[in-house]
Image 1 (cartoon, helix red, strand yellow):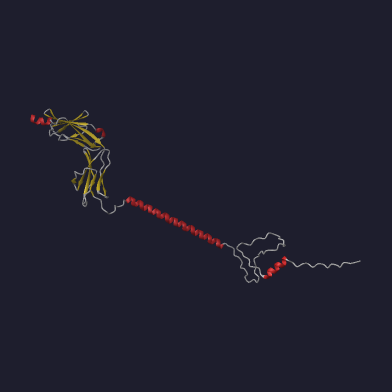
Image 2 (spheres, rainbow, N blue to C red):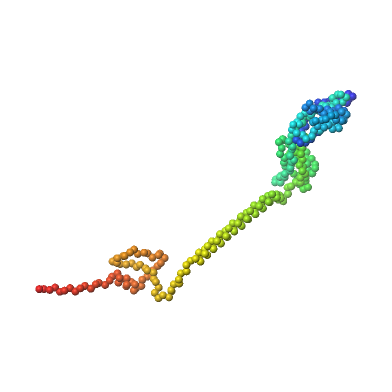
Length: 304
């Protein structure tokens, strides 16, 4: 009996931290094979097992056939110390204290590729605690590449990558992803295509509407101008067969002796008078210098 108990006593009173995500379940292991007398304690509550069978109700979990305790649907308020007591023949073989730490769920990572310069893969995940990263290349663990960035091999054909982000006991894997560093252009997102189509259609509609308004206004202007030309009065035809057509009155310079009855108006600047002919010049001179009047004869002086 002493040979069995001695190794067990060396494992007595252990402490271990256990991390679990909110909403998940956790199994707190019984490290010893003995299940004769098991007791789990938490905050004054006790769950018991005798000879591999649970006794009574367990309010904070359930005991399995191997003496392990399973706690389901973890919440923040369930953070506490869960203590295992393993007895055999009334003696304590093992005492393990599990300090349960409840953390927020780790988001699922996704892999993005850097295809310029040195080709690499990046494990993208946002979390409020420091994470550790591991990679799998075609299903094989890459133990030497424990970082967020993974440099790709020169031959990337038929290569699949998995990124693993972990915190303590918790880890999350990305989907198995083909390396996407090809020369062809990336497909355009459907949403951007839809936005571009709507914007282009709106621009074309505005241009067509502008052209229509311009043509309408131009047509209206032409109609107004045509209506004005039809409303002009019709002048009687001039008799071009006159022998003495009217000649524009031209103001020739008069002599200083001739009085001016009124201010003479100047002809329009675009109207030029023809040079006076000889008869007109003689008449003008005759008007300016009339012949002298005859003097009466003087009687001869008488000498009486």
